[in-house]
Length: 131
Image 1: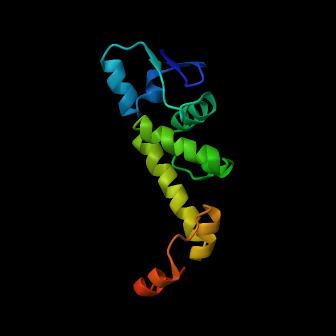
Image 2 (image 1 turned 135 degrees about the horizontal axis):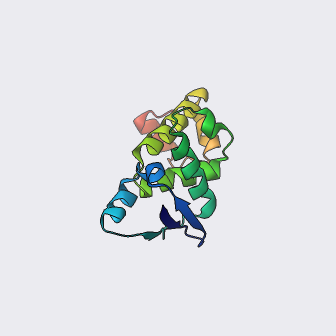
């Protein structure tokens, strides 16, 4: 068992086979670290627990992400990047892409991600952007 401490100091005891998808943690294990403290704010206990749940299932089924709110989804994206978990990073990216495809207009996508148009009308006309 591997001892992992979340950013908010919660202990997790994880089977190596569960976390072996993380290149970051695998490198730490190879350096003989028995206890790993995740000192990145995206590695809080809730996000880490959901990450371990994903890794236990080893799924690319998008239904896993359907019940996750946008904030946790973003944290999962951050933790998968920080821990270098390619399978999870790819699955979340595909899920977000599929989510965006459901929104047929730029306006809907901008509203979903709360993106404000910072291009002036002149710039918009100059580059023929449709915002």
